[in-house]
Image 1: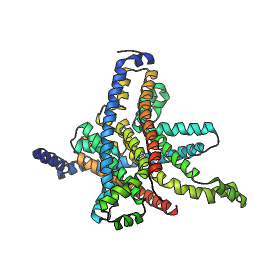
Image 2 (image 1 turned 120 degrees about the vertical axis):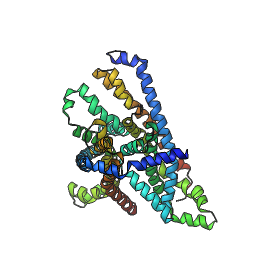
Image 3 (image 1 turned 180 degrees about the horizontal axis):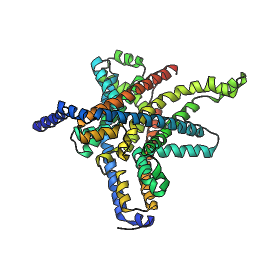
Image 4 (image 1 turned 135 degrees about the vertical axis):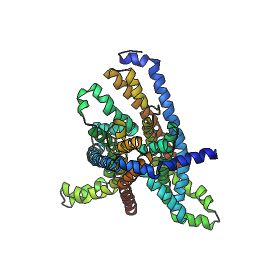
Length: 238
Length: 224
């Protein structure tokens, strides 16, 4: 057991030795990872934008007076929150083109964007719904009775308060969305995770994964921090 | 083996045994990870909550680091750097990541209990562990259940990432079946059935969680 452990441990140490770092840099691993990082950033920004749009649309629908609209929003949220992103992604990449040949022309970059925005849009729409429902109707009526226009009432009274509820989960979803763009490795698009795997296979696993982890961390940690600060702030205001 | 219709496919025992085996793998991987992450999450969460600076900071570093890197990267790391078998790597990666999330949930729940209760229990001569065990945790649990269960639902879904290691879990069966049943209608049906299985499990879990929370918050016996 202890021989096995020390062997295992020295194997791990071996993967991070100087030779492996040299090999990693020789094959251009760092530049490769940075290229992947750039794609990850682009996918994340575009994905977040679409997820926000979907989230606002379905979040508002979920609070509408129309029963049908509420049902549509419910189905969207429940479906995407209860089935795996991985399944959705491989369906869009490998299943959809069989039923709908035009889908073959969707670039893999967009497949990831579509998958993560549909998935995280469902979570964001729940946050938006909670935000809207946290504001009492009376506030809107009171604002209107004070001579505010509807837009003014929304702009100065309703939205600032709703944002306090919406922003913390929204920021957390942004972090999860960035991390989940790593499904690119499953469908073969060269974002950061794919690059990390490629340089692991062709040069050195240790340096490749360590640096990729660091890059994801640098992207996500500030956002996670922000989310926590927003949460604390919302708690104090309650 | 070759059938061209959906009903033909649904009558093949191969179709169902493949899916049930996949479901079995998904359930075993998820169940082990959930139990382990629950236990370790409480430990790390209490560490994070504690006033002892080193212990609290160790827990904070663990939580901050693991929550901010992709699960898929963790799986590959345990698989390739940790030299583990595919299933073990998947379980450990899911556990290690979910532990961090559960720890945050636990800390949030503990923080929601007013400090006055600690002082009151302390004045009654209770020890740190006793207060945690009998006073603070039972109240905090109600607050922890919804976020914890939604994290466990996420874990079940994320166990599908293990297909990248070659684990033959439920989602991975889609591509296997797709190779055997090739018409568009059959392909749609394969994905629909797999999605429906995940949906059923997760939906049931959410319903149970809602009931549990209602019962606990009704019988919690808190004063304020």
